[in-house]
Length: 349
Ligand SMILES: Cc1ncc(COP(=O)(O)O)c(C=O)c1O
Image (tube, rainbow, N blue to C red; front, side):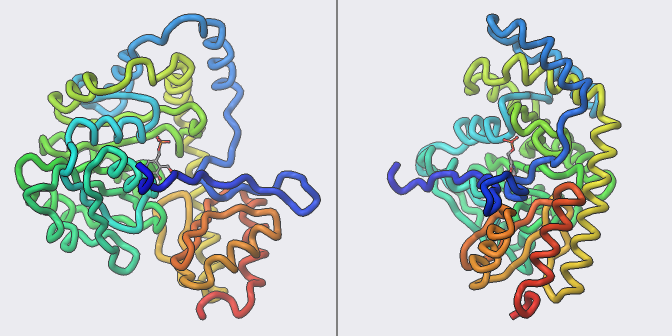
C-alpha cells in the first residue's frame, strides 16, 4: 500500500492577516444551505441515537424524479463510496481499470488500493479521447471510468461517440459514467447518461448530491445501473454508510431542487463570465461544462497557484500541468480575476 498515493483534499484559504480567504479548490457550491434544508437536518439530528434506515425512501424518490425503475437505483455515502463498491465487485486483484488522465485524482487511488492495475489514458486537447480509451481496453479490463464532464478539465465527450464506445466494450467490462457535474452541463446531459445506462446493461451512471445540490459535507451519492449491478452493490457495500442525516438532506434537497438549480444557473453564468475574462487576458481555457475552469499552465502552474494563495485564494494546482479553479460566488470570482488579470504576461507563455 506504500505506493498508493494519498488523496489530497482542497486546502483551506487563509489571507495574510490570518482571516479566512476564498476556497476555490474543491468544486463545492459556494452558497450555504437554504434555511428549509437546515431545518430538516436539525429535526433529523434528534434521532441520531438510532441506526439509519436502509435508504429506500431516497431511492424511491430518485427513481420517481428520474423516471427509472426503483430496482435500477442505489444510493450510498458519496458517489466515491459507490465507486469503491463497484470496483470491489467488478475489478478484482490484477484486473485492469482504464480511465482518461488527467481526471479525478481519486480514480488511481481507489483502483490501486484494491489491487487492480490502473491504466491511465492521456487526454487529447484536454478531452477524454474515446478512441485511445478503446485501444487501451484489453481482455483484462473489467471497468472503464469516464468522468463526463471531466475533472479537472471540465470538458465533455460527444454523445454519439460515447454510445459507440459503450457498445464496443467487450462483455464483462463495465463502463462507469461519473456525472458528478452533469447539472452544470448542457440541458439534458444527465438524462442522456441515464438513458444510456437504461439501454446498456454494462453502463453505470454515478451521480452525487455534493455539487449542484450543495451537500458535499453530507456524503450522498447514487447511481443508475442494471438491477443485477444494483443488487451486487447492495451486497458489497458497507451497511449504514448513508446516514440518516444524509438521507434527510437528500430528501430536503429534492424538495427544494428549484432553488438549488437557480443557484446552479448563477454558477453557470459566472463560469461564462470568468471564462471570457480569462481568455481576454490571454489564458488558454478549455470550454468547461462544470463548476470550475482549467488553466493548462504547465510549468507555471505552481507560480500561478502561489499568486492566488498570496491573495488569500486557494485553487487546485497539479504541478507541471495546470490549475483548476472552482467557480465561487461573484465576489470570490472577482477576487480571483483580479489576481489572474494582473498575473505577469497574462497567461500564455
Ligand atoms: C469526477 C468526480 N467524481 C466524484 C466526486 C466525488 O463525489 P462525492 O462527493 O459524491 O463522493 C468528485 C468530487 O470532486 C469528482 O470530481
